Length: 506
Image (tube, rainbow, N blue to C red; front, side, top):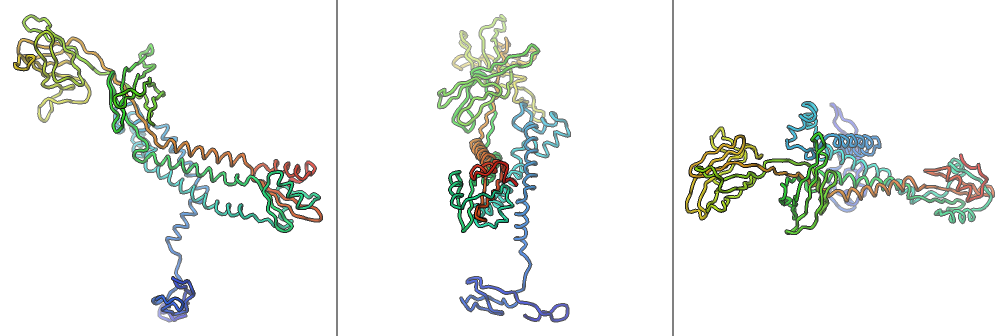
């Protein structure tokens, strides 16, 4: 006790009883040193009773919140709604359109809904922060719910209370009184597959204890599934790449040790002109050798090295322009050139003329830059190809003439010298769009689902039955309880102890 000044007067205050932080022995009031171990304590004589630690209170409230099955149910419902939305709404990188999300979704779903989906992150639901937060909340809830119930359940199951009063046995689901003794009951229950514990005049038997752990095994599987779902948002776990490959060419997959060859893209049409089937005859190339060849169709991917390669889209563009070198005086063609409109060669040999065509500048989508007034490309597409070239001798020692040819529209040409170019025809080039998907979470997802399945089998198809037997009035009193299928337990107890049918079920 000491006098404390409160509101202008002294009040009697109580000293909080304390223990030494080192040896945990009680300290006398007003002690500055522990009399047992000698630790300096400082001025502890004025220690008062303090309120609960706010961090401990917060931790307790958080634990109670996530230990609630209602909270877990709402989290699961929210995750289900989010997953449905992510399935119904086309996800970024999965739609067959070249436009960026900011342009595609308002056009696809309307200005209001498209903009709303983008702001909410529903266009990339499975990699959004709020989906990851829901998954983490479910993980925390599953862990806390399991620990909150599993620890006392395990203690109860591993340390069963054998000795029970007769009143307890008579309150069970199945109650029987039959002649016999405890030893006979033990032998019969053992033959039926029960584990036995004895304490004085009482006996406890059970089987199917594993059933009580089934929900927690299921929870472990769900945790694995949740971690796999969460890993999808981490870099490198769920990769998607788009590859455009022209017919007859090979493209290396960025960051991987293999390439893909497009031997031929095929498209079949309905009578109304809509595509009915499109497919790619493709090969996997490793170190210059073909290791796999398959036809890739929609929903029929080629699988290699963990990658699934899907047929995603296609496009057609001008591919090869067949040009004629014409002698200006006679108007007769003296040579032909197959000019690649996407990737032209620096020069072309003009057979039979002793000349060559040297490419000075080539623009596949010619336009004049409004700021610099210099020629440049307006886009990546082959739309307005323009060629600036010169005709030279085969050894390059003499320049014969220069030519500027615009191949779109009316195929205009400007030239100096005795030769000019004219466009004969343009061959189309088909490109196939392949979507490569490598999901490293799939094995973990399957493992988690397998554990969930095992947990469900244990939970629903194994029954935990408990039986108490007590010697009573020259016979034995039997009380049994089933956590599932009480009618089957009643039939088994009657079969084991030979009781008449129709007796014993409360």
